[in-house]
Length: 82
Image (cartoon, rainbow, N blue to C red; front, side):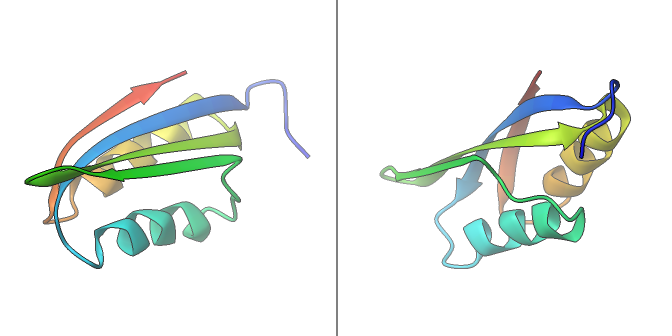
C-alpha cells in the first residue's frame, strides 16, 4: 500500500562490467521491501546500463536509495527520475 507522498521513481545506473553489480543494486532495492516493476540491463563495451523502476517510494527514501546505490564500488553514476 502506498501513501500520498509515495510515488514511482526510476533509477538509471551506469556500472563497471562486474558480475555482481546488478545483484548488488537489486539487493538495495529489496532491502527497502520493494519489488521493481521494471528492470532493464544492457551490456556495452566497458560498462553496463541498468534502469530500475519502483513504485511506493517516498522522495526522501528514493534519495537515500540513490546515495546507497552510488556507494557501490562498481557504480559509476546514478540518476534518479521521478
